[in-house]
Image (cartoon, helix red, strand yellow):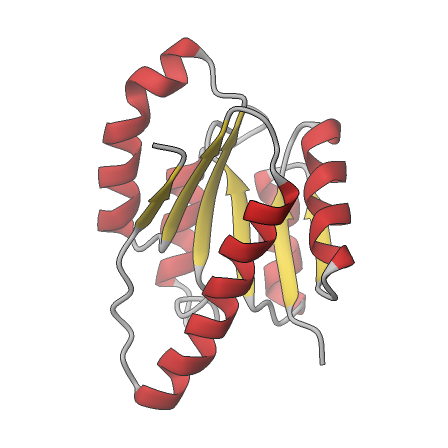
Amino acid sequence: MAALILALLEKHDNSFQVKACLEDCGLHVFVVDTFRKALDLLSVQKIDLIISDVHLENGGNVFDFLRVVKKGQRTCEIPFVLFSLQPTAMAKYLADGLRTTARHLGAVKYIEMETFDGVQFQEDINGLLSQGNQTADTGDKDLELQEIGE
């Protein structure tokens, strides 16, 4: 069975690229464009991995979303990835603080890309999904935040 991924991506171009890229490697992707829609989907659908825009603008922020996911009894074990595509100068300036906070709140990866690299993105996500399967087998639940695009 294909892994189910929730992608909270507000920009249509970003969501199209991410969805097409991940579905090309056999994953099933639910794309939503608001924090509320993401929470609604999580309440009815089992999800294997969450990808979220780092800089959300349409109600709620990524840290609110991450906190809710990690506090939920059904959702606390879902790997959570922060994604920043074509970050602005301000986003780059804030990136270290975001990574630190994300790690503290339970994110497993922070992906930052100037331009979308589908091959690299697939490798990163597939690596997390296989790592999650290994983690479930060994019982080790402490994953380190990995940084891409440095």
